[in-house]
Image 1 (spheres, one colour):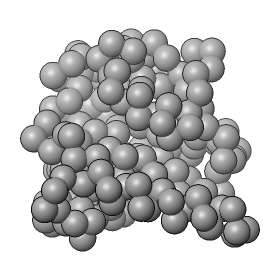
Image 2 (image 1 turned 180 degrees about the vertical axis):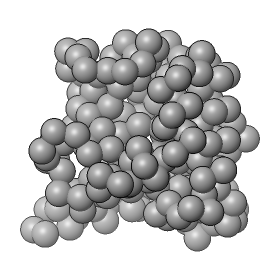
Image 3 (image 1 turned 90 degrees about the vertical axis):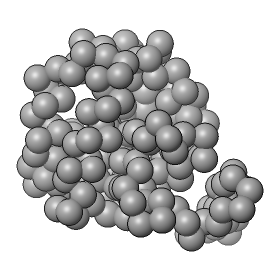
Amino acid sequence: MNEQEHHSKNEGLTDRHQHLSQGESASTIKIVDYTPEHAKAFYDLNYAWISDAYEVEPEDEKVLEDPEKYYLKDGGAILVALYQGEPVGTCALKQGDPGVVEMSKMTVSKEMRGKKIGDLLGYAVIEKARELGAEKVILYSNRKGSAAGINLYKKLGFIEVPLTGHNFKRADIKMELNL
């Protein structure tokens, strides 16, 4: 890691800690790797946001019912945000074309939104993509139902690219980040 990368990384950590609500510390929120004990939380958290804003599609059910098969078996990853030890958010990476991972199923429970947990997940999942050897992260989203998410993705450095290769009716934007 060169000096500039190290400086940027430290700035990011400082920025993230400043966004926590008053009275909370970074130790209250931990981003951890998925374990089988997180399966129910992964399902419940993602089902809640999808069903709230969209129709839950057959592809959603397939992914939510077996995240280990869908994400982990091919070398992807799932991160879980814990607030005081309880799962409150998720984000997953699925291996795609060589050097490319797809970020998906990023959510934070309704009750925990506004605490910048999504930011913490976003930074952590980008770092995880680097650890997996990815050169690029892609994602699909929806401009209307996920406007806050799209703003976060832009803040993380994602740019909009032509919409191709998606499996969900709700997808109307594709974004990518070169690592």
